[in-house]
Image 1 (cartoon, rainbow, N blue to C red):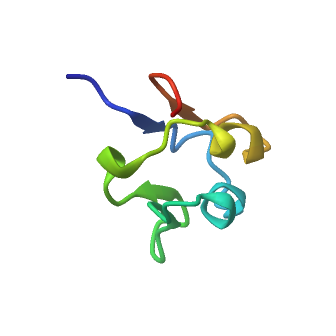
Image 2: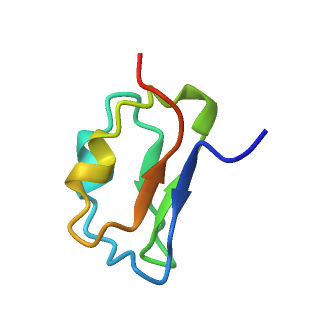
Length: 66
């Protein structure tokens, strides 16, 4: 099984927009790297709100939302 949530750390600017809107609270900005990280991607609702919130398109979600 492939990844559900992928963050391109080269693109990520650590703004936290994705984490702020994530209803499952599985996204966060890592304190040391300043990049978005995923805690438990299996909890992702796959509605892709984080994709739309990211101003640099650094986050991708696979699969259909429920």
